[in-house]
Image 1 (spheres, rainbow, N blue to C red):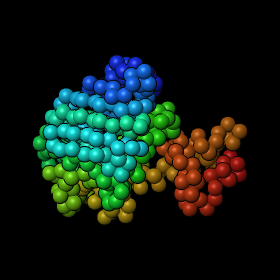
Image 2 (cartoon, one colour; image 1 turned 45 degrees about the vertical axis):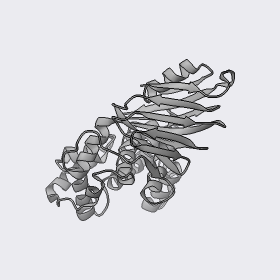
Image 3 (cartoon, rainbow, N blue to C red; image 1 turned 90 degrees about the vertical axis):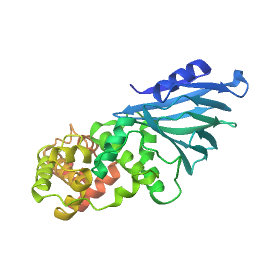
Image 4 (cartoon, one colour; image 1 turned 30 degrees about the horizontal axis):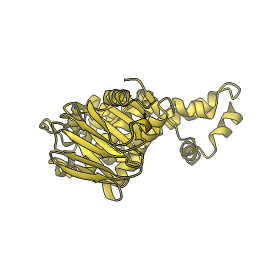
Length: 321
């Protein structure tokens, strides 16, 4: 699905376009139809659809069974009342509503107008990632709890991470859309969700994994050193190394002293430094070189670069270029 950006006063168009991004549904306008307005800005990255959805007045959305995926809705203002066969939730900016497959849903809100961030995760992607995290089969259709508090604990940490997808939905062609950035971000959001929401497998996420053999960790390090330009995720690296995700993470902490993604950032920082040294400052910029290696926040890149090399990236580019 390409990026979607729509503003409409036609309820039928609103229902159809929103259903293409998330789930088919029936839309009931509960205010003066002449004042109906809907806007949607959304994008899809691999198994995830992320979007910002707003209505100008009170509406009700009713779906059939959500067979193809899981969804998380976070109101950015106001209150959204939701109901599934598993319970009712009054979601607000501090409490996300969560929807699992094989259940219908009803959403009722926007009495004074409002918006939400909606995240849809393909069913197979979430269940495969969960199985990889616990290194065991997962029964299809994981029963996620109907809500996540975003004010504290794992839910607050997850929302801090997922907010990056809010920015991506606002600017689908921005720097966060680069595969080197977007793919690991999506994997992290799914993993963070599985740690933040209650479900039958959650306790198994905190059990100690089996210790990986050192040669498997060395293989993973070699992959990152030789192919740093690939849009690596922890899941990708674990599969290429013959390990579970958790075993890979434990092995890196034990044998390398940092996480796989932290090690990858170090490798990419080294390559960015080499490019800055060799670049012609008349033809290249710090932002362009940083972006090439997956660094989209220039302030963070500059801080990490200065800590490692003792000078600003711009100084390297103009002094040595």
